[in-house]
Amino acid sequence: SGNTLSLTGDGTTVDLSAYLDNTDAQDISLSGTNLSIDNGSTLDLVAFMDNTDDQDLTAATLTGTTLEIEIEGGAAVSVDLSPILSDVEAQIADHEARIAELEACACGGMLKVEEHDEVKAILYQNIPNPFNNTSMIKYYIPEGVNSANLVISSSMGQIISNINIVNSGYGQEHVNAEGLAPGTYYYSLYINEVLFDSKAMIVQ
Image 1 (cartoon, rainbow, N blue to C red):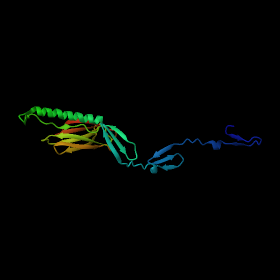
Image 2 (cartoon, rainbow, N blue to C red; image 1 turned 180 degrees about the horizontal axis):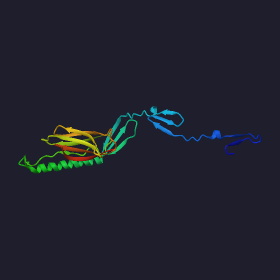
Image 3 (spheres, one colour; image 1 turned 45 degrees about the vertical axis):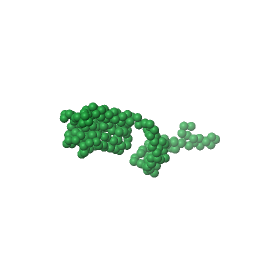
Image 4 (cartoon, helix red, strand yellow; image 1 turned 180 degrees about the vertical axis):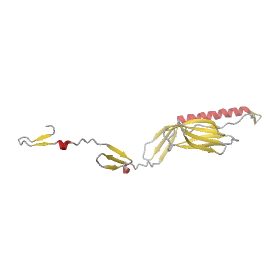
């Protein structure tokens, strides 16, 4: 009855209040790899966190625009490359248009170029985009440029990397997503210390 335990026929009673004050209202906390409970023991989770994901790629098959990747000890994953290929196709179309313009200038087998015509620098969209591993940025630097820099910055304007481009012509740089938080970043091409073009890239 309540906290009192009675024995029928004997009349003996015992107050259990002192034994019932055990609410189990305890908190669990994690500090580093140690999992602890209030007024209790601590468990080191290091042995359970030894998961290096050290797996090898076993197969990669491209069918149309679908890339199927198989990883050791894991399930196959299909990746639709259509968004990437559409960007590449747009770049190819742009190059074809440029070639057509150059061919239209050809006269008597000689390419006619007006003195005021200059080949401008080109900054391409990074591939792939979005990405969570590495991505490639291609560019073209014309002859006669004194300085060229590729600057990568966060959406808040913080400079992540400033790459000095030494050689003219076509080139490329690789961006590693390691250490970058998911979000939108920008890369800009500066020619002779003047901003030429900027593009956005997304880290997943």
